[in-house]
Length: 312
Ligand code: HMG
Ligand code: MG
Image (cartoon, rainbow, N blue to C red; front, side, top):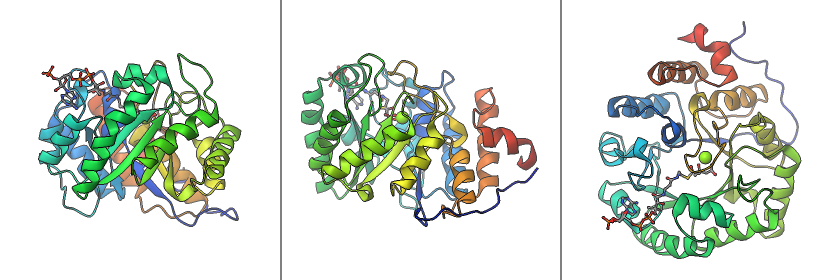
């Protein structure tokens, strides 16, 4: 079996993309198994060694809301925060920021919702209340010299509210960017998006003067659309993609949210398209196979399943 695809470029696609790895955070936050600290630290180190240019490490959220990541301080203390690979952490509020600053983090991410119901479920806040919660977080983080990313969730559909109009997503995204975030990651939290919808959403952001250079795409693969959606986004000029090693992931506060776009599946497609990404696929597959052993179940990634026994 070939261990790399043939390289056949497609005209007008970006030459290079940045893969923003979310496995240690989005992946592990949804696992019923609480992964030991040593394994988490090794997971992040192995992802860095595999060439991922940015690895979201954990969350400084309330430990009873996400017990899987309750060891954020201990984990971050073991990671190379001063190294060349940024290791962002999620912070929902000032308490989270205080913890991240005390731990020496240099990159943080706030996470807002495009819908009222998910703001309540995920942040215990109203939609308007989330901006009030984030405003001092972003201001203080920027004053301290930190880099601030913002997520917007439920961009393609919401399990409680159904379809989410693109205009509503653009409004939420604009408000988060206006707070001062440098990048906006558009989350298909429950994986219901399809490629035409991706194009319509990106066109709507463009129409609101938010160009692709400020956007990242964050796909979940619940309905098997994540890679098709990533290709649609590439064709619209997106150059930052969130992905999770082995396809781990989900959101404990979003019914029916399953794994993220698997980093290996994205890497395989990018390699085939001749698009630079800097990731060593063999090392990455070996890492996901190793992690699947710790979680006690096979990786949902098609590429890990195809290559796993070959490279481990
Ligand atoms: P709350 O209960 O409303 O908090 O939760 P509060 O402000 O009322 O405070 C209550 C107590 O919690 C206080 O302590 C605070 O100090 C403490 P007490 O005075 O009672 O002793 N507290 C904290 N402790 C530690 N760290 C903190 C913190 N904040 C307050 N940061 C809160 C509000 C936002 C904290 C809660 O709703 C929460 O932690 N939510 C996080 C949920 C989460 O992590 N979801 C998953 C990530 S989002 C996601 O996965 C989507 C994404 O991947 C994109 C996509 O797919 O769309 C990003
Ligand atoms: Mg997510």
